[in-house]
Length: 467
Image 1 (tube, one colour):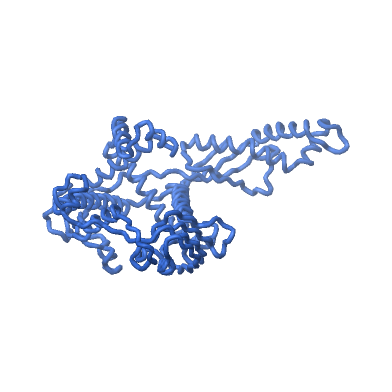
Image 2 (image 1 turned 180 degrees about the horizontal axis):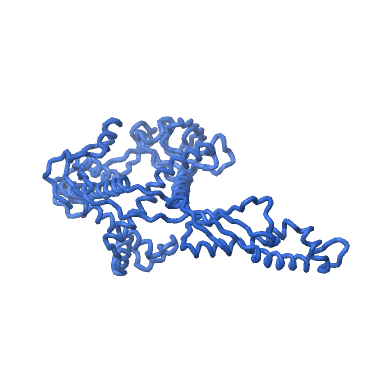
């Protein structure tokens, strides 16, 4: 066997393999003998037909078996000879496939296309310029947290045999059936509390529960608009039966020092509560700012370093993104089979761009970890497992069992810690300045795009410190 390696690209290699006539002849003889021993040929007893007759009668079958016997070992041998590490099964083709001869009268030429990992140069990641922006905590955020706490402590006060009105709370057992799926399992919700003023709930639903009394049973129909907040109900018509169990009002405590002191969290006053809530929110805001710095550092590293990525890695990542999207749809009660195939293909094409960035980022982080000599000790993994156990209030053994069920086991933690530590190394090598908070979600699209352009010089004051 002879082989020649052709460099098609950094990720694509082509092997030209010549299988000699003698190898083919030996294989042809062995395969022909096997067929002759078990072939049923009219006019001959089983196993006694002349080999030449068998070869003529089973020409294509023998040809296929000979190729299967000689080609894979030849390709494997050539891959080993040239020290290639395929990322997927090689793509094979034969010269003049229709007229291939396998009887040993001539050699056979095979082409194997192999996809491999490219040689990734040492990444350029030092000196990246990033502005850290910490979102300030607003008073309304603290008020919202207090309001959420109040709602959790709200008390339901039954009304005195009167009909419900806007602003009341109705408790009911609810059953709903889709108009276009009358035999499907119904929507069932027992002891459902419905606030007759909640903007989150469809207005037509709320209005049908105005004027009801305890022990009433009411049937009504709601046509949900296509833009409904609930994806499972959008554009649907649902026939409901509501059995009213109670009508009343929801009363919340007064927001004062006495209420704050009653929370059993050691608050001295309402002002103390707000002060500590602000401190907690500021910690969250600071952590989010650091996370954005890390994301920006990796994003800029990806932009700085261009190299060819194996298509098989991009395809695998794209399929993973699409599968995650489909699972999310199913969790929302949407049947993926109802999505138009053209829409799925469009989503797949759009996801390829993100998939390529994901793969490029992962490959770069591996190279940076190598350059920075990032290592994760067993003690680091054990400490992280203990943190997870403390957080979820389970034992470390239960955490390990869960990790094993998900696949990957403790190695999953090791990879995550390595990625985190490598991102920290990229951030540590960056030039970071502190700047005022900019709410990009409130900016016109063209302004946001302009802010994301690479900067020739930092616009912020040099009052910030390097991380």
